[in-house]
Length: 80
Image 1 (cartoon, rainbow, N blue to C red):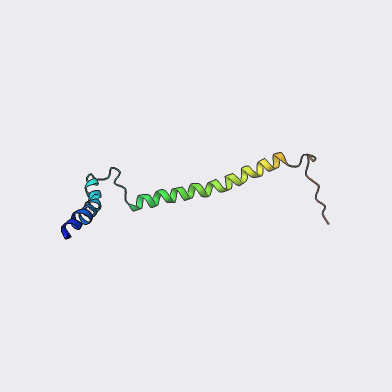
Image 2 (image 1 turned 135 degrees about the vertical axis):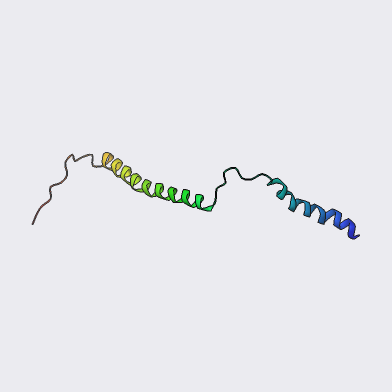
């Protein structure tokens, strides 16, 4: 009885767990380490931080072009 359970349950489970080890036979092509990924992530953070003010500037320009249809000049400032 134990051999039937071994052949039906334990052996397929063991083979399914060990099969990925045979799939990773070749070394990685890029040879990248953790520091490379951290550097690329830091570069991505810099790019995103520069995009935020650019998007705000474009939104402000669109608001300026589409808004204030009645006035062409800014209102004068009164000095007390």
